[in-house]
Amino acid sequence: MIKSGDSFFYKGTRYVIGAILSIGGRHYIAAASHIFHETGNSVQVNGTDGIMKRFLDDFDIALIELTSDCMAQITELGSAALMEDAVLMNEQRNIPCRVIQGGTSLISLLFRCFDMPQPGDSGSPIVQKGKVIGLLSSIALGNCTGTAVSSEVLRNLSFH
Image (cartoon, rainbow, N blue to C red):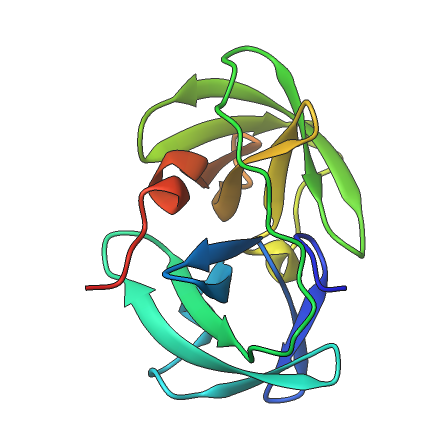
């Protein structure tokens, strides 16, 4: 069963599945888009292929379509609670953080300076109260903060 926080492989490198979304009756992985160069690229997920279908131009999000026979758990999306604790979660690590600012498209996070996300954590789900509230987009090592794309962006996706 593929789920949020699991890994996929693109050109031999491991990356993080931020969320599994159902859009128009099909399942898609939401992941960091800065790792891809163009649509149509193939990724490996749990022994099956996925195809890079769409970039969200205003955000660091790529949508990867999964095959119809792929077993995937749809991600439960929540809304960020300001000044509350959260956790960046993936197969490699869980990193505590705090939501310090939120909006309909971006969330600002504060990490402990000795426990910051690493480059391979891009696109990781940010979880609060068991629900994904955003996907990690960038970090600023100088002030121990990060930016995540809000779950509101994911909640409002559709293909035209």
